[in-house]
Structure formats: C-alpha cells, structure tokens
Length: 217
Image 1 (cartoon, rainbow, N blue to C red):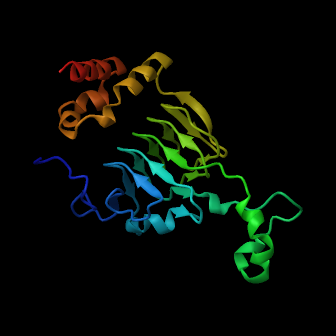
Image 2 (cartoon, rainbow, N blue to C red):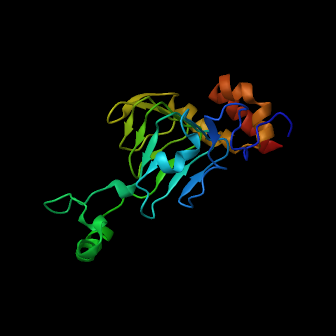
Image 3 (tube, one colour):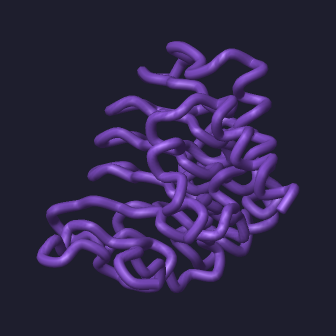
C-alpha cells in the first residue's frame, strides 16, 4: 500500500539509521516481536538482540507486541541473569564448567523461573528502562524513563521509579475495558491508517464505535 510504512522494512525512516523495526531484525527464535514495534538507538540500533536482550541463556522467551516504542538504553534482562539463592553462596560456579559444572548443574537446572517476559501492544518505553525477568506489561502501558520494572504492569498504567510503581491509570476502568475489547492493534493496517486521528487523539468510546462498525461490516 502506497505511503503506508512497510512492516518488513528494517529502517522505516529514510536517513535515520538509528530507528529500526524489530520484527524484521530479530533472528533468535526465543524473541517474538509484533509489526511496527520500533527501537531507537543512535549507536547500534541493529544490535538490539546482543546489547538489549541480556542473559538469554535459557528457554524463557521475550514476547513484545505490535506498535510498541522502545527508547535508547532500554534493556530486557532474561532469566539467565539469576544467580542461585538456595544456599549460602550466590556465586555462579556452574558457568565456569569442568568439575564445578558437573557438581552443580542439577542445582542450576532446578532453579525456579518466572517464565517468559511478555510485553503487550502499544507500550511506550522511555529512555534507559530495565525490564526484569518474567514480568508482564499490559497493553497501552507507559514505562517512564529510567524505570526498573520488577513486577507486572496492568494495561494502560503509567509506572516509574526503581522499582517501578504505578503513577496513574491512563483511563478509567470502563474505558480500559473498551480499549481492550476494541484491540485496535489487530485492525488491518489500512483500517488503522483510515482511523489514525481517532487512535491518536480520540476517546476510548470513539475507538469502541469504530471496532463495533468493523464487527458489523
């Protein structure tokens, strides 16, 4: 479609190598990213998998939805960053191999995991955020600059700080329900384009009306 960004284009902005769409970039099967989610970094945006997804040694996955905006310095710490805490020492003997690994590998494999890290659709990450292993961030959330997210974030909630705490809900509960039902991020891109002004500046009720019209069509 003419004049609509191609979600398969690595650099969607001409002359701006610092902006990449992540879906066509990532190759690790443990990382899943939706269409139009972008990462901005003036120094190596294409190094996202290596520099911004850290300690991805285990089976845990990083799942990021569509239409997310990820600012420079945002890092996702995966479960491989965890050290053993079941005994006296937290030193990671196992990683050095040899007898140390032979004697302790079962302990490491038996460590509990918080599971996958899951980011919903339309989430905005400010500069320098850190996302800890196994958290779920709901649709429409905003993660303030410098936040360290250690716990789940509800949909359409603004959080900030270290550890990140809720600052406020973006909308009332009934409006959040409207937006989650409407799921505008799942509309065909042509429909999204047609209703961009409503998506950017309209109310949840207006988004709901468009969704209802689509269902009735």
